[in-house]
Image 1 (cartoon, chains in turn cyan, purple):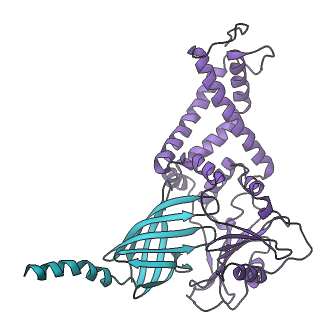
Image 2 (cartoon, chains in turn cyan, blue):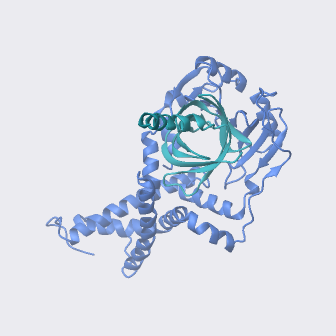
Image 3 (cartoon, chains in turn purple, red):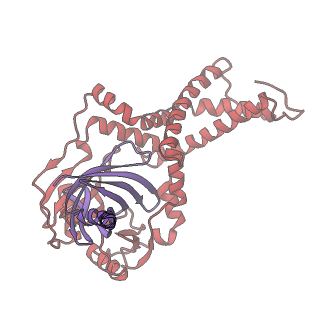
Amino acid sequence: MNIRICIVLLLLPLCTAFAADLTGKWSGTFRATGADHDIPQLFILQQDGAGLHGSGGPDQSEQYPIENAVINGDKVTFELTTGEWRFSYRLRVSGGEMSGDLDLKSENNARKAKVSLKRVE
Amino acid sequence: MVFEPELDRALHPRLAYVRPGPDVHSLAELGSTVSQRFNSEPVVAYFLASEPDLAWQVALPSGIVYVNQHTGEILGERSRGQTFLGFVHEVHVRLGGGEFGKDILRWSTLATLVSLATGLYLWWPAKRVRVRRNGSGRSLWVDLHNTIGIIALAPLALIVGTGVLLGFENELAPAVERIIASRPSAVTRFRQASAQMSAPAITPDQAVAIARRVMPDAVPYRLQMPKYGGSYRVALLDPRRSIAADHNVVVLDSSGNVLSKIQSSDLSEGDRLFAANEEIHTGSIWGLPTRVAACFTSLAAVVQVSSGWLMWLYRKKLISAPPSSPERT
């Protein structure tokens, strides 16, 4: 009995890790440290097993391809470039929400931000 | 910071400057050359320089590539990240310390405004505007503080006042917009964007040409390539405008249909006021003359802070005046 419980407890995190399918639309905001206002975010993601593809940007009409996406359990990292800025996301998935940190780098500046996204579709 | 672009170019002269030539390569050619050199990385955006002797830039995910638009030569790549100029900028707006640094800075800017007013009050009885030739020690700093303070008072008040408005923009914006009855900024929409993942049907050069036809008086300075959202975004500079001259954007779908345009003339009164405030603060509002004025005003601020501090040290006898220096205030 104890062995069964142990196996279940060991497998439980793995189940939740693989259960989270990120496919869909995610909407939210980020705010850079010391910034005045939130910046809108919309991601359109497609999960293909351990692979993640799709795009992100401020809205539906301005989307940039995500690159170097890695899903590791409930953690997901990816990057995108808008021209001046390179965005590196380090997010944690929890149910219908993703939140975490964002590093922004331009030609002369580097900033940090907090991101919060919710599944909308 | 007033001359940040020029300083940045001075720090990277081999990347920034080119010899002007009779021909200019197309964006498609430049993009293709850059992409081939950098492991087929996709071009994210093009930055077109305003002067023929400044290099154009091609943005890739890995960094910004500088190209000679006249010869097609790749001049080099800069990676993204904090530089010395970026650090100076960060110190100026946030003391390099995020939210806390920003709070210190904006409240001390407000205190500086009070300091300017009290300085005028203290100056008023004697109305001293001279630096004595034989002055030394405390009297020299008192003379400098009085003279530079009164000469630079108006521009200093302007720069500090606009700085206060910038620092408290979030808190003040709703009240300002109510007072001036500001309407929202207008965006002219022509058609609905549709997400397209296929290759664009027009070249980047054609996208720029279409944007120029939409805004004939403006000069394109940035082109965002379409991807997923399916739209080219061409940012243009309107040289006829002194406020928010770079707030012009034409959005095209990948077939060249104009989806929308935003013009600086369509900005709300509130947005225009805050844009003007920022341009007064940085001195960019009327070009080089106001930038030079802002630079000298900033130097005057440094002299005022230093001389005020030295006067205080003399008063507290933390440093002593030379024997020949008479104590006059």
